[in-house]
Image (tube, rainbow over all chains, first blue to last red; front, side):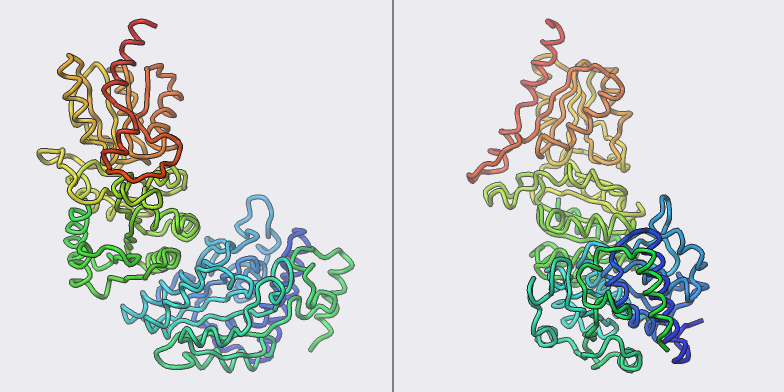
Length: 276
Length: 306
């Protein structure tokens, strides 16, 4: 019933599969945001391989953990992991962004396993707070996870939610920041510097951990020992690399927008294949 | 109206533990009765309406019926995208309640005037839009929106609005209430303008003009049948709303009339599309919206002497 016990090698394979499928989807649809998908792939692999109590055969199981991909532009990575875990047939991924497809370029509910529609930034964490509050006040067992981008922390709505969650002691809520240091129009440092990010969350009374967001063991270690502190919401600041896993995409702003050519896709897939 | 609202909501919440109430740090001397009775289902989200609205969506998607409450534009325009994406797009069972619709906070200035809400919220798919005409309708609107699955917006006045309905009235979402009969002209009112419509009915009566009065408490879905019946059975239609002249009740009624080629003389009492940088009472500003008596007389005369 729950997906929390994949062997470690399977998580490695899952992360690789997410990257390959997302690359193929973005290439086929000539769509964008592949860099953001690649930076989140390892986090998604651990969440769906080791952490989330969800049941692909019953996506609406009332007591399931809730996961919100607040950075809804990384949709192809989420659809990929859901298909890999059996929420829907992998064939459906071929329809990504096609006319009439349920697989929309920004995360859209109605797809089995997708909790809420996102895409406009700064919406995920407030909704996650509502789901966590519902569970807390009713003493229900589910936990809530929201994966945020660094750029979206510019949105004031997040800081309203960041103020709210500790006040209501939502220790069933975990935010994960995919801190790849690049936002839409430049580096986070140049556009609107978040530094010092852990201190900001700490000052708002969250329990904070910083990890390497591409080290599967570190991700698993932190996400399987939640909450970080009893009585506090947890935030995991995952230091990541935009475009991670494909040499010519890593750290490149352009891959927020560009779609790989046939040759670039072949090279990217070959690079991923050659890794363990 | 706000007292009628909170009394009705508190009564319902006693029998339905899915009902929650969220406020944006407003509601002093109004919301306490709910908060004290159901502390586990009350949240003061602070002066943070975007988060309040996202919270409401999250609570509703977890199986609850969630009311958000604040003044005028704060629970609506301030967090419009949360209403659009988090609530409406998910058909979440959230009921947004604004007090102080129109010029209820007249002297407090434009920031506190609710003048564009009906138009804007009416354009959101899945959204039901309700502006009760008096405290009786406000009370009846509460069980109606609880019953209705999906997003609703309820625009209330403030306090001390006159009771227009003398006895019990049938309140059904999407069905106008005929408040006065008449076959010469029709006054269609939404929200707190109902009293002005009834007063206009009396004034026209003294001149021998029998004006029907409809309380169009639901802006969406609009009761097109009642509008077309008025077009067939009376010789002029005037709408009344405490709202910008663009996109509200008058525009909705005009859509119905134009699409049916009804050809009936029509005018709006509505707020001109401009700002006032002055203080004023609700009555002072309402007068800017136009005089329904004058408009009815003018339309009927124009019809006689085209």
